[in-house]
Amino acid sequence: MRIYQVSAAAGFACAALLVVNAARRGGFLPETAFTHAIAPFAALTGLFAIVGIYLLIRDSAGGLGLAGFVLNAAGLTGAFAVEYILHFVFPYLDRPVVTGLLAATTGRAFLVTSMILILGVLAFSAAAIRSRAMDVPAVVLYAAGMMPGSLRNLVPEPVYLGGLVVAAIGVAWMARRLWLTGRTVPALAPAA
View 1: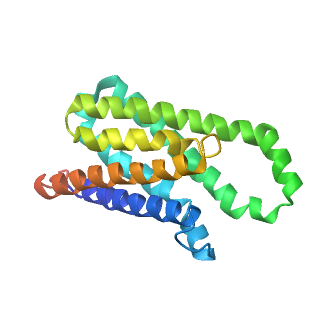
View 2: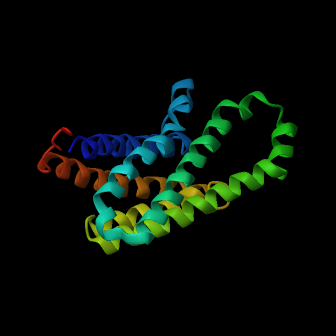
């Protein structure tokens, strides 16, 4: 089914972008307009990847899978918005304005987004493990990496960056599973 392969391609892109983001923030890649411009798209491609993963696990994931999918999708959507603001809005504001925003409702909204993402990742991962449709180590790596990866400013920088890389490995592994499934599942016949 093509949706699995499209979602797998998004997962591979997500994994690559997570590694690029970690390398850029860690000083292994240069800070350029291009590396900043692509940074938010890790969350967006991750959103497309979990759609395929959910479709693969949904029959055995139950209510927990649906709740995890919805929360994970909402959290990734919020993470895309946060990254967009960090890369395309905050750099053009004076530092005191940014500090004021982060100390007020914007900072709280960023924290709520992180908590929604964490709850979604945990519920979605538990459902994916329970479904047995995904390799358990891949799901565990995704969940373990996304915990610090979701807490950008609340954990030490090396922990955050390591989380991004660990999550990238888990996402790539799950994307591989989606890709292989997409090659073996027959395409749906057109509706009559």
